[in-house]
Image 1 (tube, rainbow, N blue to C red):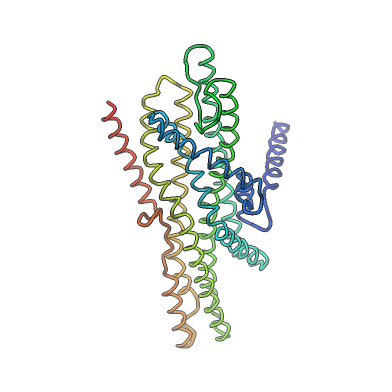
Image 2 (tube, one colour):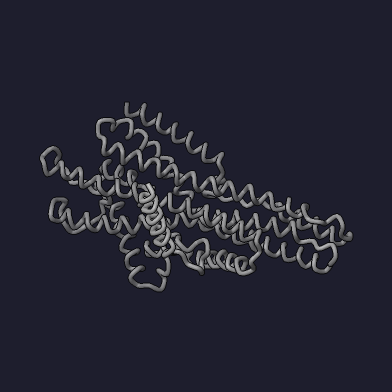
Length: 399
């Protein structure tokens, strides 16, 4: 029993050491996400020619699939695109990220800089908040990566299992995951070259999807934590023995809050277009996936992979809307901190400044998927209802 416990301890220790390798002191919260973006050839892609070429090649390969779908007019081609919608959304996310690379870099630098300054300051209360939200981010990130890896493994092993059946004579079609253009036929050996290209590009785009999605969630978690720190700053800004220091603290709280609001709006502008496209595609895809799961009761392998992929999509959607909703709630709590301070004992002029700060810190920080859809839990429930409606419509049409 003792030996087994020691083995578990060693295993845990080695996994912790392995995960520490992807940490970066320059990015206290966002270190692992930068590593994943590097793996997906997104980070430093403006200066690294190999990364730039890889991404452009992936984009062209995916576009060739759309061209083939339009030219051939085969329902199976459209079904394949919808079936692996996350990869195509990864290309959309990569394109938007590259288009706004400098803004992303500016946003990440801002978050990392304030975190480094707060850690260097050594305030115990602030450190507790930072440590708490970093741990929360790591738990969510590693769980999401594990779930994503299982889903990706299921997607890329399914064609090989089906192709094995084709070799045995029980089926006659070689299945693709990303049916992009290659100057070879659909039969071996050209098929194997195509599958190698699809697998490599698929894993790169998967790293883009995992990196982008968890980065967005991480920044939302960071903003939520910084809003809690902002509330703490407001609650402790008044020094009843020093009016000038109190007024200086009020001005500093106002400056920090205005800056935080500015970067939240920048962040919203960066994620809003991809989120809008994601909202439309996922709503359609979820309905189709549920219908497939109902129909594939006899095909266990495809049923499991479809179910895992469906769970991954729902988890991904919930993570975005849950943390967006959390930021919205925390933003309304900052003004509470203003009136938790010792403002009553100050002079009238200082009290007026406190009142103005309390008014300005009431600003709601809301994220939007497109121009109209707020990213809240109410919207998430609405998406589930829309998905069920689409499922019933498709079921009645196909039936």
